[in-house]
Image (cartoon, rainbow, N blue to C red; front, side):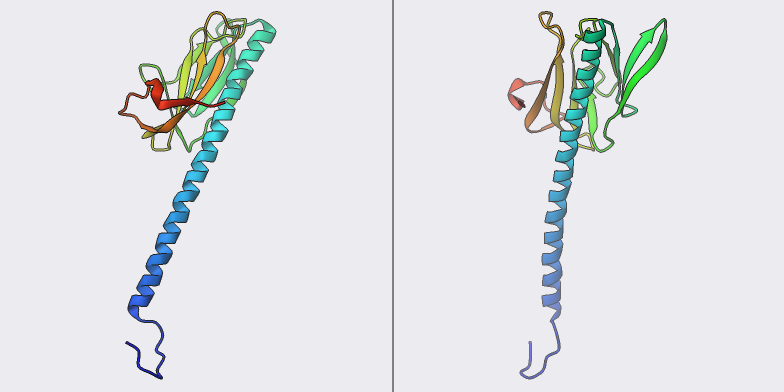
Length: 181
């Protein structure tokens, strides 16, 4: 309570109210910045991974030769290899972001995997790479290659989850995904 003529500053309640409002605003800004950073990281990784896959495919098609994609989730790296007589030559290497988690459609979701190309540029077997949040709790994107026999090179499709998918959900259901253009 203020007495007329005396100005003793702010009351404790006013100070606590001001601090509470500032904390709430700070948290809202912080959460939005984290979401923006994560969305930017997803955009970069989608582009980098699909371009890396396309590069391997184009080399194989142009050189009429088989190459290897060695995706090392454990190392957060992907390698473009030329294997000759049991020796591996690294043609290119791509670091994948430390700020996201990854999994595949293989039986061991977090295992590294390798795919060999055909000399027409297709892969011997299709695959999907899922992009998850850093904690690895929710799936946001899927990058898939389709190796149908009629195509000379793989069809690379990027799908966005309609809403983030929990790992415990059946994330293979088509109705959970929308294809990006």
